[in-house]
Length: 136
Image (tube, rainbow, N blue to C red; front, top):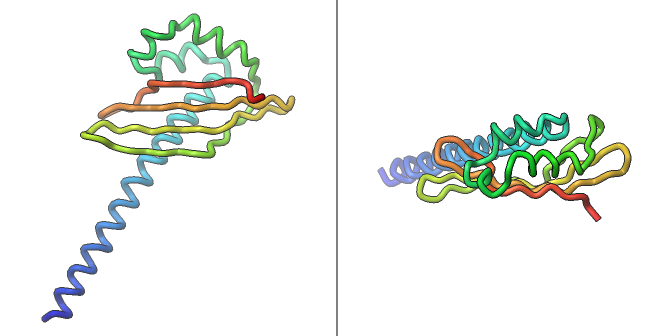
């Protein structure tokens, strides 16, 4: 009887760990996908679409589309530029999900650009902060 209870508790713990790993893994993959799709758009010169599709309305109030596009163009990225993410951190607080992504965009001409994004939202994650600047 005691062995059966211990076995049942152990099974519940294992199931809980598996569910937690799947939820966190799914959120991490979603964050990487958002960052990847956004970064590919800005590298390809589709900054207008990146602005429209990924930026949160509050960030759009702080940063006009023209300023955003001019800032991206000033980085002079080309199709040799590739992103690498060194940190993806996801969290959830009272139904609001968040993802912090940091990394580096490296181009063939030895250009390196630091990146840091923060996405937040309940159902759909939108970018609330962005940093893209040449690495010195």
